[in-house]
Length: 319
Ligand code: XMP
Image (cartoon, rainbow, N blue to C red; front, side, top):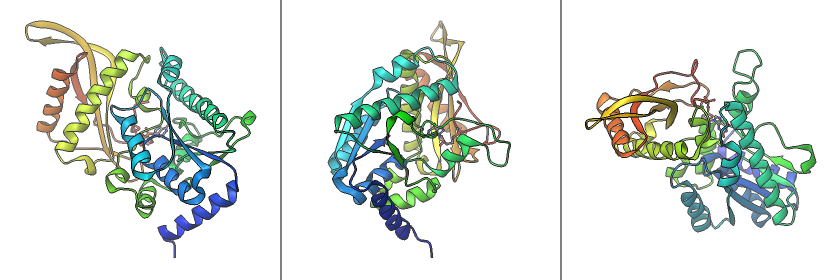
């Protein structure tokens, strides 16, 4: 009989066999998947593991602090906090094409991990929280012809020259199974139940050319939206919720002044594995409340819209 406890033991044994006595670097994003990998690896190989949390500059508000405190203070897992925000943003600035954004982020992650591996005297392995759907969706869309919908930032392997191999213990699992494994490993419920957050982060929630100012507007709108979702007790009923800042400005009126500011779109979906999704049916009072707060509190936004597209035909992220 297949149980999560048995999977955990097997996964630990497989990791030990794969890496032997070598050092392993684990990229932590702050999301559930990479955290589960980190805790699993820590159990499997102890201090052969170094976790690296990369601040990409396209994270949500407060994220770096939360991750660092969780790992250093609660789990006692050694953690390198690498602030690479300028490196990422400099490379992304002005880039508008969604696949280009994804490729830049994927390769910048690799560059950063390579540097960190050198700093610890050479690591032969890079561990990451790749899931089964990441693999499928980067390759082809379920049931359809073999075309790439989105290149997931962590799928596609490592460059030849790196002389490092991947450790991906979650590659056969779906999200709900990863959460179960997380609980099995003793991760706190409020952490295990966090909404998924993609590696390319806010960069793929900012259609059009990336710039620092619009990134900051998006970050502030997103924070308010999630705050209202939590206050309304809806967080756990939703698979994923986030704001998107459109590269479009529209005319509005503020007081007795004309305004000409950006449109913020809100997205919230229910799903079981991220492969298909339905938009979440918020009531209008809730949407009205979020809209007024964002427009009143975030300079640069004067219009809020709600995305009512399911997947398919939409995808969850806008890019
Ligand atoms: P889509 O937009 O393809 O998203 O419907 C399905 C799920 O995957 C997440 N996603 C990613 N996660 N790297 C990740 O780690 C990526 O490049 C990536 N692209 C999409 C998305 O947030 C959703 O949960």
